Image 1 (spheres, rainbow, N blue to C red):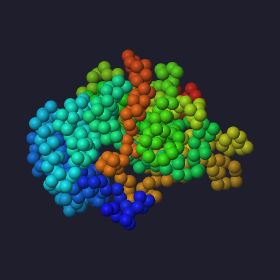
Image 2 (cartoon, rainbow, N blue to C red):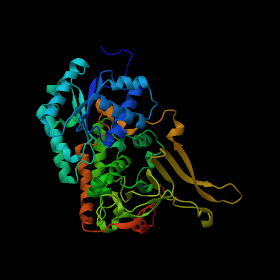
Image 3 (cartoon, rainbow, N blue to C red):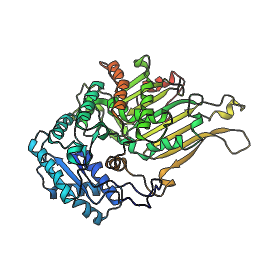
Image 4 (tube, rainbow, N blue to C red):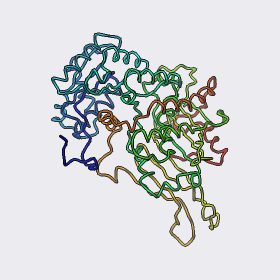
Length: 505
């Protein structure tokens, strides 16, 4: 019998999953140590995990449960967002188990299946388990085959729900994405597949929907009648770190433009869904992705760059070709910019400028809506020299918030008008700090909420945008730019030809 005092309308009551297991493949890797284990601790610290919750780690190391607990302790202490509480950790650590083995080891997967079965009796978990693929994409087919062989992916056989979480990249092009989607959907039922894009777990990204659809202030001007252009920027001040092999095989466009930035574009441009049901939201995002048009001349409407040695934040930075394990003749781009259109009535003739780059002056991800200038200005030209376009800027990271820029008179006897900014910051407006993206997304997987997870159709449609660009770039060299600059000069020229300029983030 349910709690008669609990209603769906009471948002104060937290969502707590049923008793379940979280199985992490590749649990000793960077993603698990830096993001997943700290997120699990933070969820436990916030009281959002059920008493019967178990973490099963699977990796090559021949460890015992105590060794795994030590690794998890170090990872949780280093990466936790919430205050450290020893009692919370002791309860959580008692539910950690480690299963050693390689992905082609049948006996190890048989052992994993037996361990999950044992949890029914020992921990009161009725067959519920989520499998997190924190592993290279090349290993996905092998692990999926093992899960199918052992029956661990079968809801009916397990007696509960079985879900799978797949990290990006979702393929390397359209054909590999289709093949991967088919394989995953064959092993698990499609509604149990969670393709994770951690950007969608960020509070500021979710706030795009609240900003647009909960306020009558913005939606009436959210169209081509009032909007001049949209700029979406993801700049990183770091280089490629330890990801040389992966990054050199993919590049900036495949790494983040195909997923993170096209998802941001879809949220900005989508029509209002009939409800916040996951299927309704995904349907509207998919319409936008299908309506995206590439430049007629891709060579002029896109720019790809590669960073040279330079200075970032006062420190010397090596060039991409000097990075460890990067071939000296690599033509992989570390910067990509593209002018996209959206072929529908709302956004006709409005350019969407999207750019991503590494070794930029600073780390920032933002969406800037630039509005058209007022059709008639009764002021003297000298009075409005400092006046630009009205702007609504959504800052995704690191200073999460929203900025509204508009013209105001400068105090004094003269009628001088210049831009000012109204600035809303999450950290100042709310007493509770924003959850880390992986906290929200792991919790959503465990409770079965697919709202923030792209489906197969969205992934495949995104590749239909990227593949023609990659084909046009084949055999070309990226434009050089120095580390610490905002990208190649050709990127500024691309906007300059249309009388626009990149917003300096």
